[in-house]
Image (tube, rainbow, N blue to C red; front, side, top):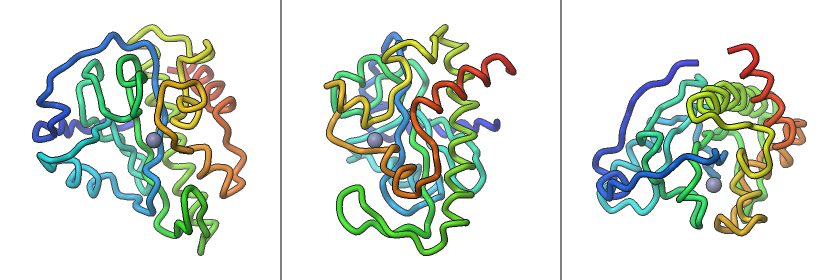
Length: 189
Ligand SMILES: [Zn+2]
């Protein structure tokens, strides 16, 4: 896993300078057909930005771009999760097209699956690394959650990511499987 430091020093979230005690990790996906992390880094460098996450995972390369110090309070969950959880965005395939809300069509399923796998595998490695760094148990309730699960638990805003992406492509990934994959990766690391 390659982690490239691209701290978003122009983002008002970075400038607010608040830190947290990390108690968990929240997995997101960007919700638009853009595989390039660089594009988001450019957008989030806007001094008027109202959102900021700790990292983006490029869906073409699997490279992790760290955009906030891990113990910085991010603006990613739209709820109290920001006080406890690191937020990581997976970029999404360019061959999907959103048709309303979390629904989308896909023009090239093979390519979409390759992008989704690239981001998923890198997310597993990153989350395993962060669980070790912050001494978190990936299988403990509420430690690793998706944005959707965060919403279901009342700690995040009403988004469906990334579960909607995996379900929409019927690719077999689930958050339960993700947590187990992170636990397995910790054994290997
Ligand atoms: Zn999200």
